[in-house]
Length: 125
Image (cartoon, rainbow, N blue to C red; front, side, top):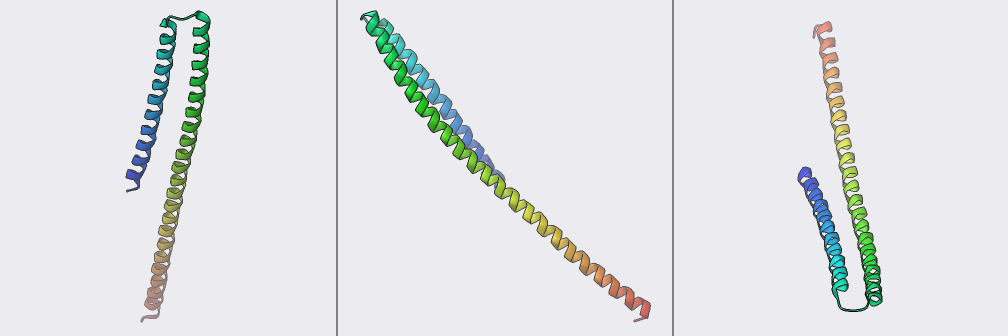
């Protein structure tokens, strides 16, 4: 059950990264399309350069915002995965300790029974 949960988390992270790559491609395609449109539009070179500069600044701002948002989401997802791993590690560690403690108790019971049986055999009971 825990493995399925890990797979779901990995698939979710993989899907997020795929969406991030897709959005990056979409933004790059938009920039290229805008530049081509401006270069082919019938207007003065100075006006075209000004528009390209403005579009570039707008795109840089949008890209920066998207990267910051994506980085925050990746950090949050990483924190979730790390927390889940720590919780599972703690649970496994506790389970291991419980198994060891139970084994010690059983061993002590067997040793005590063996000592009792040994004493009885020595005394002829």
